[in-house]
Amino acid sequence: MPPYADIYVLTKIRNEDSVSAFLDKFAPLREETAVDYGIPQHVDSPHTTFLTAVEVVAYCCVHTSEPYSVYWRCRGDGDPAYAMVFFTSDSFLILGLSTEEGTAKRYFAELLEHTGSDIGYVTIETPPPETATEFRGFAEEQSA
Image (cartoon, rainbow, N blue to C red; front, side):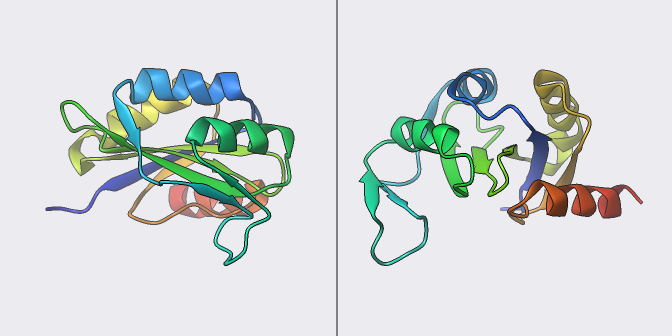
């Protein structure tokens, strides 16, 4: 299987409605890839564990300095393959899609239009940075 292109777009709008609108548009048929969601993420003993993505999204929208990554596998025709939401540690939101390389340019344009953002990039199977500042710097390097 060829590698997926990862499309990332940065937005300041970090709320449940924007996440829902993104998922409904780009991944209407989806399934969560995790069985639970510990806060903080990637630690042995989280202080809180949620059982659904909806719960962790709600938490991260209120706790705007909490970094977190949530992935959904898209069902249906197979493209995009994954939808991703990354909550940055500096109150921003990164929305992402993993697609076949041949459709990446189209999805990138659609995602920029959907979010109203003017900053993003396409890469190959690489997660985005954890802050908006790092994201902007990486996006500028990609476009240079």
